[in-house]
Image 1 (cartoon, helix red, strand yellow):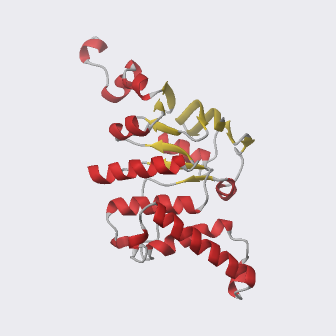
Image 2 (cartoon, one colour; image 1 turned 120 degrees about the horizontal axis):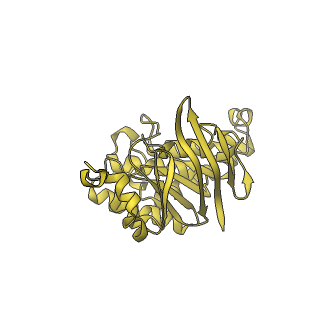
Image 3 (tube, helix red, strand yellow; image 1 turned 90 degrees about the horizontal axis):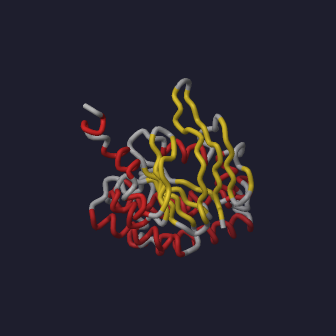
Length: 258
């Protein structure tokens, strides 16, 4: 079953075409990876899907409904949530407080009710605390829940950002280069975390430069170059694709006729 459908997606900035007539589907409960050289348009695709940018042309459907003209908060409410290349956490707050705040989009009580600590506000707070602690336990962050975020090692900081994403109760989670700056041990642990998230029924779309990670995690891989899709398929097929090899390594002088 298709959870995300992208058709004819185009984004131009003046004379520069960052995304060029892109078509792809993401199936429910899979790990779908998007790769490409620097500047290929990968993060622009995420920005378009989540309405941080508006497409020049094209259509985006989530769970069968057109979200092309939806606002960012509306898309998040539907269960399509993203992380960013740079960690998007409140560094001067505790780990637990970061996750609690991230639940705000699902609060039942309004600001007035929270100010006066009404019954519905108290019920909200109880549910949010319970969910936050469960997320931290699931991601093995419970031991550092009372630490200030800026004191965390880099690997745990990246996991905290995923915890913040999970607090929004996603059906589809977009991860933008979550492995950046990690050592081998941190990478292995986060791979396990991402598989566990998928096993909970959350679909994953992953942008990543580390090809070992992509080939290990990605069940299907889409390769883009200069905003266009040049290949899509299983990891083994992508590894042996001549267009993919050329995009990453370039042609030899002999092939260019030099």
